[in-house]
Image (tube, rainbow, N blue to C red; front, side, top):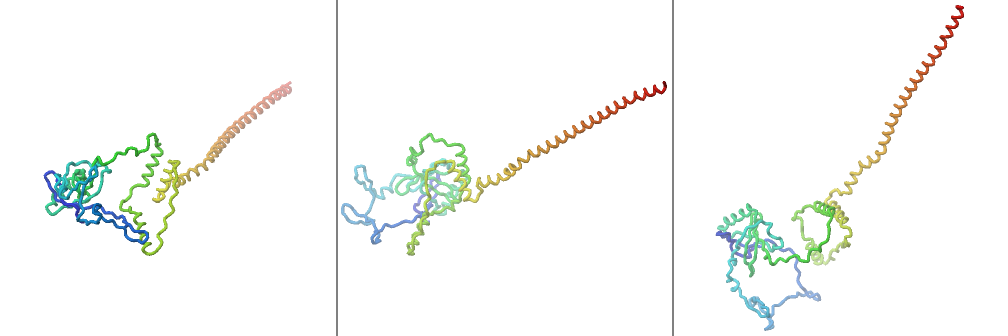
Amino acid sequence: MRSIWNGAISFGLVSIPIKLVNATESHSISFRQIHTEDGGRIRYRKVCELEDREVTQAEIGKAYEDADGSLIPITDEDLASLPLPTAKTIEIVAFVPNDRIDPLQMDAAYYLAASGAPAAKPYTLLREALKRSNKVAIAKFALRGRERLGMLRVVGDAIAMHGLLWPDEVREPEGVAPDAGVTVRDKELDLADALMDTLGEVDLEDLHDEYREAVEEVIAAKAAGEAPPEAPEPAKGGKVLDLMAALEKSVRDAKESRGEETEEESAEVRRLPARKTARAAPKQPAGKKTTAKKTAAKRTAASAKKTAKSTQAAKKSTTAKSTAKKTPAKKSSARKRSA
């Protein structure tokens, strides 16, 4: 990779010669301006407004426009001789926990490559120190005509530097958040949590620029003299009238896209035993009836036994009475015979 800046990392009394290399690259598709009538290229010519003629790149310099519109020429030698310790040095000023850095401050990313064999030892020392401390280094450096703020961290076996905006370059979010007075219910938060859990994590390597791919398809079709692919029907938008319903549908859709069982499906499966129990429920009184029948039978048997006992007792009393009546008759007849 081609270096865009050469200098050194200043780490206390340690100096590490490094080369600055872009850590990112753009894959976006760029277009040229053309004349729509004949397809000719539209080009910009650099013209001096005083002489009304086109000038070459070698004739072009820099100037600062003052408040009154006057121009103050600034040469490359003026910028190169700035009294800055960071002109050719990435000066580390502090080591802080990585959560101290607001992501809003992050700008372009670079790799710091060790420049030559003598840089290998101090480079490795700084890298391992950053690893063990779980901290990042805050540094100042000058690049492209201005001093910048940077953050050094470990990426794999390399040291990366993120350009940072100065704190006063980050705007406050005034007037961005909605007005106060909106209440979020616990059920809505629960559904939002469920949606977050359902969506889960994603491997960033699986994400890609679908817009760029679609543009490439259009370019390929037009180059082949074919009609470009038709755009899909746009989704019909509308106001979300019921936030709970929207959250529930989002959770269902997310689960279906991941091949997971939705709550409705699982609820139906769970209801099956409940339905069987509900149908069997009326049979429970039948069991009670059977118990009642057994109880009634027992009562009938008991009453029958009582009736039998009373019948036997009645028979015995009747027999005893008839026997008692017969006995005096025999005595009277015996008396007559003796007379």
